[in-house]
Image (cartoon, rainbow, N blue to C red; front, side, top):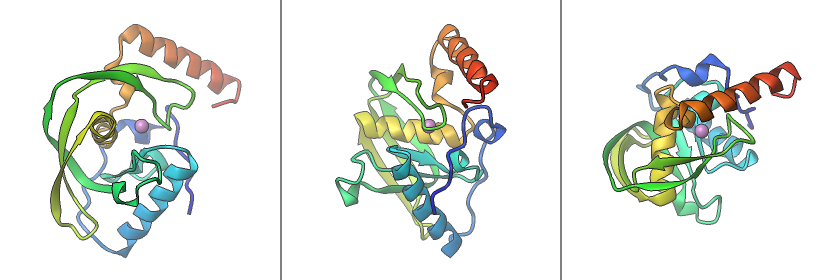
Length: 169
Ligand code: NI
């Protein structure tokens, strides 16, 4: 099932999501739907709050279907290590049509649980490192625009306000 993507302005995007404690078929189905929704929206990462579900679950595929082994499910993820710096353009399915340069760590290790509740660690570089940070931020109610200057952030918010008024958001 493809869920619509929740857009900036919905409070679900700005509150911390709840920890997952039950690893049942419901979670498996939700993760399947999240991948489907992410691909439909042409994204490489999606957090559950972005489909209106405030639970600590994120899916990532920085290869966008090219490598089935690159599909990652992160349940209750935490960033345990980050090193280096990278700066490049970043966007978010919940803030469509906008992009800004964001400085992030270059190499990031995440610790998370898989669909069976088993803990694992995964280290990513560049885009994958960025995805780990971006999606984990989502689960903490934080959006990438919190990492850009206040001036740029206000400009984006003003433009979104206009779009909302025009019924285009
Ligand atoms: Ni996002």
